Image (cartoon, rainbow, N blue to C red; front, side, top):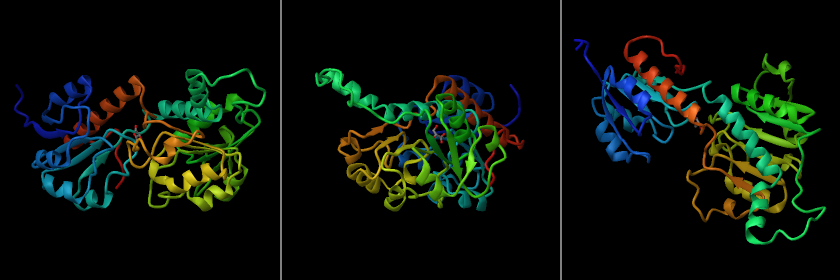
Length: 325
Ligand SMILES: O=C(O)[C@H](O)CO
C-alpha cells in the first residue's frame, strides 16, 4: 500500500469499468452508480468536501454547486466536449480547473451528422412510417422526394474540428461548394476546400445549413425567425451542436409555414423533448435523442480521457485536455 493520500472524488454517473478502475488506483470514489441524472439535492450533498468531480453535460456547474463543494474542490472533469453547462467565471474565481473531451468524439459526431442529414433530406423516417402503416401505395414519381447532396452547397455554421470532419465526410457525395462563417477565416479551409463568407451569404446560398458550433452567449438563440427567413425555402437545417442555438418556436413556425423545407435535430431544449412537443408532430422534422457521440469506441475514449484529466489535474500535472478559463 502506498502512503500517498488518496483523493476524494465524486462521479455523477455510472462509468465504464475501465475508467472507474483507473480512478480507483488513486482515489476514494463516491459515485451515483446509475444511468439516470443524479438528483440535484443528492449531488449537492455528496460533492461537499470533494477534491475532484467527474460530471456529464447534464450537471449544472454553477455557484450553488461550487459553494456546496467548498474550498477542497480543485478540478471538474466533464465527459463532454461542450462545456456550456459550466459557469466558467465561477470556476476561475475559485481556481478550480476544468477538463473536457475534445477530439475523441469528432469522428462519431461527424458520422452522426451525415446520417441525420441524409435521414432528413431523403425523408427516411417518413418513408419507414409509410411502409409500416400500409400507406406505401404504388411507386410514384413525385413521392418521397427530397434534395440530393450532389451539386449542392453546404453551409457549415461552426468550422472547428467537428465542422471540418463533417465536410470531409460529405465531400464524396459530390457537394459542389462548402461555405463557412465565423469571426476569421480558418487555415484548414483550403483542404476541403471551404469558402469563408458572411453569415447572410451562407444562409442565402446553402441548400443544407449544418450547425456544429459551440453554444456561447453569441450563438444562443441564433437561429430565429429572421435567420430562417434568409434561408432558401428548400433549405435543410441540421443541428448537432446544442438545442439552445435554436429558437424552437420559430423553427416550428418556419417548418409549418414552408419558410424552410426540412430540419434534423440531434439536440433540443429541453432534453428529453416532451412527447407532445410541436416539433414531434411535424413530418418534415427528424429529432434524435442527443446521440452524436454514441459509438461504443467514442464513449469509452470519452470516459478514459475524462478520468485521465481528473487524475493529472489532481497530481498537479497538465491535463491532456484542459479548458482555458
Ligand atoms: O458535448 C458533447 O460532448 C456532446 O454533446 C455529447 O457527447
